[in-house]
Image 1 (tube, protein in one colour):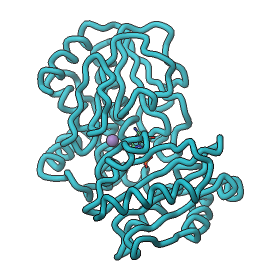
Image 2 (cartoon, helix red, strand yellow; image 1 turned 90 degrees about the vertical axis):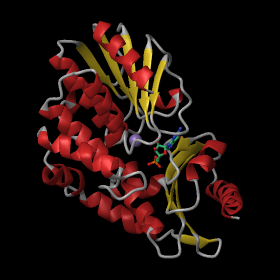
Image 3 (cartoon, rainbow, N blue to C red; image 1 turned 135 degrees about the horizontal axis):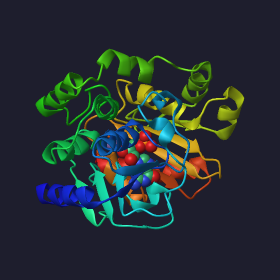
Image 4 (cartoon, rainbow, N blue to C red; image 1 turned 30 degrees about the vertical axis):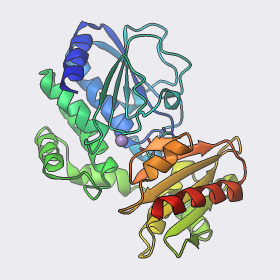
Length: 316
Ligand code: 5GP
Ligand code: MN
């Protein structure tokens, strides 16, 4: 991976116009990682544009530079870099327009880049971006530090998840020293909830069903629930975490009806079941403890039935 980082630094230094690509249904890690590099590139007087083809979550509006994100990739650029995206289809773009550097930490990454910097031991893609900035001797202004710190805390559940260790805190320390404020970032991320979200959560929680000796919990979220409350689709995630947090539960599932009627599945596990492996078998991806996929089936019960069979096998 060190070799890939060295090659990427070379490519970045040569490029004049760089497109920074983030994954569909973006989270803090993909956006924070892209913005972390973006502000560094501005310091190097590079032209850079930020791309996300879908809707941005309401609580990430504080990330420095987020308003610069465009829905379409630029017509011409000489380098593309993707962040936190395990497979090319999750970028939401038609085709690769230029040399592509893939920066990520998903074990399930399909290595779709011309250079792939994929570190499954990193707690967040933001950590990989920081390693690249540091190795390249590139600027790390306050705006980059805030963006990368946000990526790091969000992907680790504020330093709770597997993979968090001394190096995570060492990185957090460096980012704080460069101007990231933990209190401010936590407040921006977590303490600006819209009422619509609090109205949505009980509707989703009411669907909670236990399976396989109460080791699995499933939840459903319909388009109707979103329309009824005015909430947006990413707002159900807290219900999923509450279901996972039940004492008996090892795996929690959220089945969400998409705009086109397909079912998006989000999975979280506590300590044994590798949900990343299950997601890959269903055409998706992710990590051991957090993964997902979109099923072409339009039927909650069928998707759930297939999933429970797969989970049962994993638990044996
Ligand atoms: P979430 O359940 O919050 O959407 O995603 C949890 C994790 O699974 C994230 O790391 C995300 O990248 C991955 N993931 C979720 N849905 C998909 C999918 O449809 N395809 C792939 N490759 N990964 C996914
Ligand atoms: Mn991530």
